[in-house]
Length: 268
Image (tube, rainbow, N blue to C red):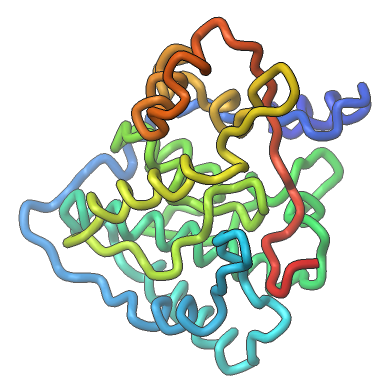
């Protein structure tokens, strides 16, 4: 609730794109993993992504929300319901990580479908003091009612402490790292996270020059602590874009930007 109120105050002050990003908050409820695991079936999510996720001319993925059939809406709902019926504490760490990332992304797509057409996911929310749907209760897992913020900031970030999570979860916006066109799988999750990182850092929305300053994704501002602060962000960018060595430095003039328009297909 605090972040909702703060976001609304910022909007009233004339800062409509400001976001009071939640900090990682350890929650013991899901801090348990099995040594042996079952393999979670993500095949229906894979079929949905294959059918409705497309790349635009810039190589960015978009979702054909307006083309999703009632049958596929039902299949998505059934997939999410099946995930909610599992106890992720019976999974090992890689399987649980894939579970939570896929659940977050599938819930986000389902939210947009339930309100489509919308120009931005920020217009989807319950109550007055809201900056989008991230604090709305959406699902119950192992007896706990969860929001998207719970999944990202109370489970994924504190339990895995892997900044690449920010490149894997998708908020249905053009400024967000792309929705992966396939599910995350335990057996390939390290390679998939590395691929998501490479994809995002190579894109204009992650970093580009504009006039006499550099424009970085607001993700590096909101969650800077996960990247090691400003020095860590610069090191990360240069590690993946060595052509900017000597140009982008810790002393460079930086601006942050984020495009909240819906990641819909076709582009509008």
